[in-house]
Image (cartoon, rainbow, N blue to C red):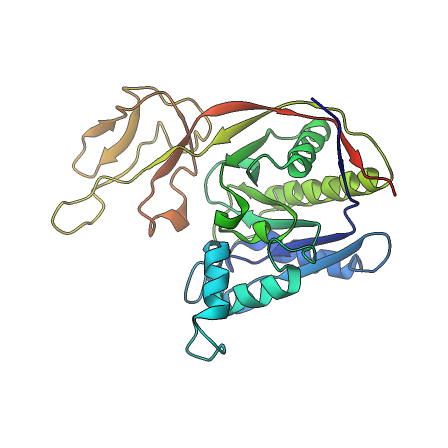
Length: 315
């Protein structure tokens, strides 16, 4: 593939607490502030506590999932239809407006060059990078982290959406990625999970420094998992209540190929429910926050993405 050049990554934002009970990002930000990492210079590093009221309450959100508020249409609606933001405006819509003004505006030349948002999952997913579309910068960051981290598998979840339809915070930056790390219970900080986050953030900084210094990152291939479908829990047709739990043979088996006939649920009455779809890879298995979204797990395909060599654009 042809060599691709990008402008320097001069403004980098690291966000945490987008979901207020996911603690790795909250504590990572506190550590970065203690190290006085936020500064002006060749790279301006900005640290942002995304949802402070939710963090204070140790809740995922106050009124609305903040990480679903950043499509271009929603941001325009906030600015155009709501008029002046008032106390009656849902809190997360106000925060989306504020974050878009601080780190964007989305899709503009004023947006930060790279936005990294830190999340936790209760699922056994290890370290994952969630990426939108074929953006070579975060894909090369993935490749760089994979080449340096040996303590755990580093995977990517690829969401094929145009930037205008991308709904999560990292889409506000010119380039963006989510670090999704687990398993970690809500409201809890685990040392092993925090250390994975810390290493991934430091390797992201290392990539930025090398990129801006003129290093060429060679092309190659990376694996990623697409998001194809989701599966809900079995439910009572009258009440809508869940009637089964994730089967013990599926629990904690994120990214293990799921085949027809494999057990997926255990009914409270004792029967096993087996999988009847095509062979796909499950992840976000039994994620706590997805109960309200009626998702027991997500299903995806494994794909290979070919990356071109990249380097910084010289003046």
